[in-house]
Length: 229
Image (cartoon, rainbow, N blue to C red; front, side, top):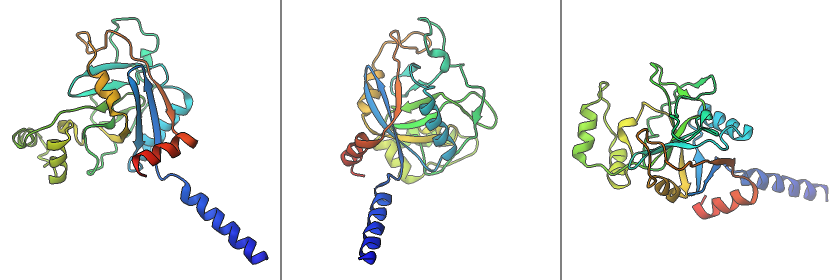
């Protein structure tokens, strides 16, 4: 009987550990829809910082303050909370940066989450500002031109080149801004936001505030089922 109980407990523990998700998922809610994003474990500094910001509520009520169709939507500026209409945004920060985490296999395909930054030599990321790529599809000739324009002479890998031609993205940002997650559901939200009217600084004429949360419990189980994880 004791052996049976021990075996049953061992089996239960194994199931519990097996059921634990391998990745962290976050949800960004706006009046233009909801997007679900998987954070990459290959960029732990950015992942952990983003989780901390979510738990602290730092990103809640910040705006998507910069929107460029066929490029990206940017948000997370702490100064955007309650910012008056027309104010130029994008310079707000939290007093620290995140060291760049460039991973060759992580690139700017459509739907990725990446960290914004100012023009600093180390290419360190903003602590809170981020963008989601909408992008566009590229031809081989356009990708060749991007390669030729790079001072470091870096080539676009063939598998990534194929993605840029069929799915799209922003290849000219690769290895210059840290990519740390990707949309797994709700990309329509990004496309919806990209249709809004903006001012001369690419700020939407109507504010687009966000609420950001970790996906947990029943919602997480449902999401994993829907995306086949």
